Image (cartoon, rainbow, N blue to C red; front, side, top):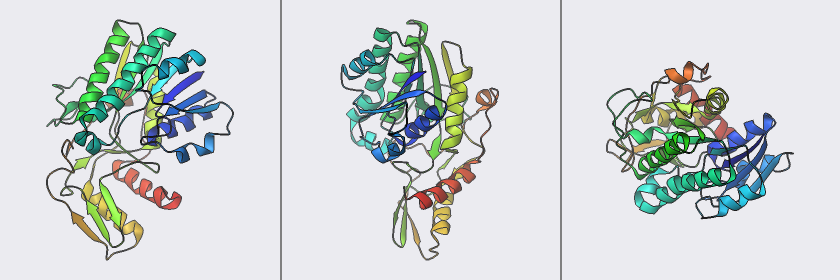
Length: 307
């Protein structure tokens, strides 16, 4: 199998490349390096079956040219602006990196007869619901340009599946943790830990290995034209708990935890949400880590590996 991974040098994309290579796929990894890092894939660059190309998927014709060079069996579309704060400051950023990249992927699929696509989506498509989210929950009223652009991309992929005969798997991610991450809810200085918001924000956190398990399971077992799943670990964790775990792990009890205040970290942040993952679990998926265990393990690995 020859797979194209867009955003493959990013946090989650690079971990997906690791697993696809381990499965025996030929992986073409492309990234514009806006948030992705070469260091995330440096260990793969000499592996047989791994090809990296610097490529801006949002640039008209770039993906078309690549697909003309290599006939891909499938696309794992991970390319996105995952920094929602940056998207709130620049209205064009999410439009370009989340929606336009998806449109270009769809164009390439139609022209080069690529049958299947995996799409990395998000809980942000829902906005601020006051109930547990299932795949059929609504209305979908995003409060960030990140969520709006992902929702628009999902809509276009729905058309691709029902009108253009493509098979699309959509997995809506929660907050994902481990090393190689590009941003977060805390910022560390010696002797001081700044926490965005009041620390009461409460969300499900998922270890990236558990997420990759879910991606591959849905990919293997989904056959309907449009398959949509929610993915979340066990339980939820507050931002205050994350800050306290970091201080304890660093071993500096005198570190000051300072909160910026307000009920959210930035405009467009959703302070609380909860997923129903029963549809995904029915496929046989079980996370290895609870939400707080995932955070604790991520802190340990980030300290051990340096990023």
